Image (cartoon, rainbow, N blue to C red):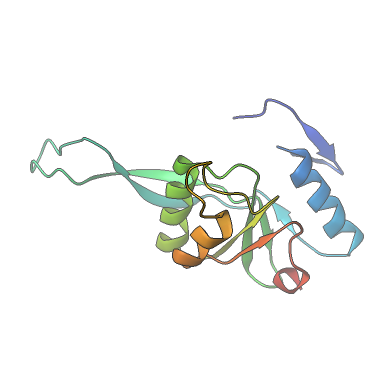
Length: 143
């Protein structure tokens, strides 16, 4: 587990203050949700690998991913993100496109991917067909 700091709220331990604050907002709004409800499986590409059986240079690894919030009333999974680095973008792209679940991302801010690359997090999601928002989880996603 990656728990460097813990942020408790009503029986759950959240991984960030941002997650805890969003959970409090949902509770205050009377929204039913589950935190880290389900593990989703996906396959990620292994770079510079070769299959020992067939010699293929395209090798995948089975991995698990646990979205932050699940909303039973809408069937939507929401992942909250502060930093959206290259590794995270690759993982989210794999998960969102391989899963049959409705997975969406909410960013703390719509930052640029890098200082040199002036594409924003939101624009990247648009190009990859991922539904996203900035700030708070939109009410229409949860009710």
